[in-house]
Image 1 (cartoon, helix red, strand yellow):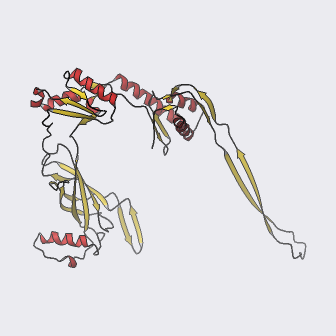
Image 2 (cartoon, rainbow, N blue to C red):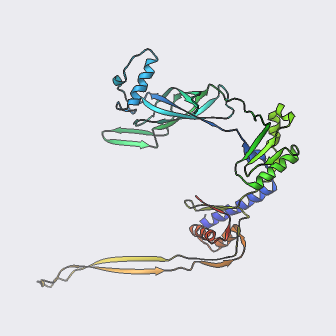
Image 3 (cartoon, helix red, strand yellow):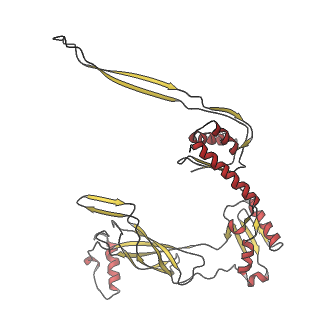
Length: 372
């Protein structure tokens, strides 16, 4: 499939999706979340054992000290200076604690090397405490690492795939202290935060909540926050009240945007992105320089003179080609109309991207241009 045909299909799909979105209102829960619902980061320092000589070198003081501390907990006294093993590595362990985590829930953890270990393949993480920024332990991690790579070296030869010094343990951490149940606070109200701040959308959400849940309980404070008062009945059954708020239907407003991915040559725009009247002229200049070297060898007619010798002759040819580019005057329309016109003229994907960027620079494209 040709590139311009692919872009045409993408724009038609974007227009269809935009029209469908206008016909079918969205739920409030699809536009954002209640303020206070967030994940909490956990981090800890641990030891990975069982490595096949690919761990930290004996020169790593942190590894020697950490292993000595672990052994001392089992009544084994080994000075850090006496530790000499490349089967262990000091690692950092991180995880995300959901907002409504409970005791006994499991979390995925990420393990990364902090020393000079060559690979963590085949290693096992010892029991590691995962702490929040306040220093409180919320989870314990332990288990075998899943490494998406490897590294093997011998006699100066090395074979490596991906990053063998980072891995993961699915469901490798157990929550020991769950998060406290979420409370709206003493003001008896909650704040709904939009994922994409927009004054029009915030006003529409507040109006829809007032119309479908209760009159006068919602107010848009800014482009992203909608404050919702909790009635007396809602404070006794907060879950049911928020469930009603989440399922309120609303027609959100959307900003005009054009997204361009120069690596893949993809252009996606909403069907209502407007373009003012603009003149477009686009072409390219191709210069081809070809050099042909030939050897001039004098014919042998006997004994030649002192000035006769073989010579190399270079023949250079320069060709300049200036094909007819895109040139027309377009009236006020949409990006979809423009791209369809360019597609009918068999304009390449790269040229369409260049034209859209030039139109934006000229101030005729009334949309946010996002280049990825």
